[in-house]
Image 1 (cartoon, rainbow, N blue to C red):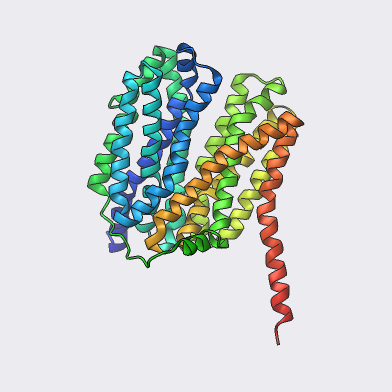
Image 2: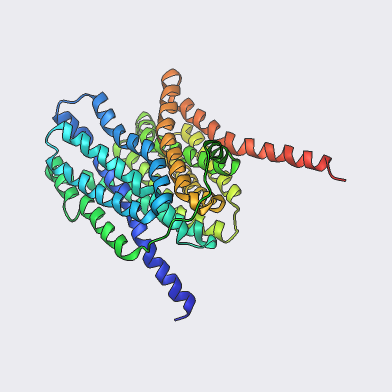
Length: 405
């Protein structure tokens, strides 16, 4: 075996626990979220309380991801990763005793805070443990396993609830086969396999320096693309069933369309990462392609029947699958290694805001007009990002041409 092959195998052993961490956060969050409705009904809770119970997880992530990202820069990403995984396991175990809504609130909040710790830490380690030529591939693989967790969580959680009620789901989530056991196992695996990556010395940063860096185009474009992609993905998962029902399709057909969306988003991510690593696509062109495909999918929502629904699902899935790894690889390429955790945490914040903002926008427009108009409004916003960037580039090129001797 060549030295390069041995190096590649060693790098792979270090990355697998990080991919498992991405799967864990996605699987655990969605397995519980998809089945909270039955718990809330059993406790006599209102739809508003259910919405707050769902939002508390994301709220913790929005507030804490940038904080834990900066902590990863200061003390190293590995301790933050391990601490977050252990905390996620402990708070998941609390669901076994979730007989009262108060304890469920605490467990849900704790899960969100723990995920806010190890999610940006995992992204930071993936970047630090890979050379520049493999950033896209590494982030693509990470996104693939995270998407598998998003897909498997509601499905397996629903099967457990169907066979043994919500109590069985909570028991499994706390046992060795569930989220708590998975998080604990991944923590042990990461402790053994992921090397300690020393923090990079950093130049002192003022508030003005931070504001200037976060307002730079190199940060705003990929982060905006991530927010837009997450908004479209959230809208697709949440509103496609309504579109299918309005077209006379049953739950099986609409569920299949949502599954197609998730599978396409998962499968395309490693391919997109390899394409930018091999210079088949530049970062900017890949982001524009992803945004255009996603916008086309939203615009196709006016097409009738199951065929139209599948076109929407495929376009949104492929478009968001292209954007996610490329945006993270683009951010890693332009970020000082000493600020990588802060950048990844802030970019994750952009994703969370898109996750909440997309459904709010589509829901508000749909309430005032129609659901198709809601899809169209989000599609226009997605197209505005590459269009504005392209126009600015044309103006810049013409201005530079006038100044040529």
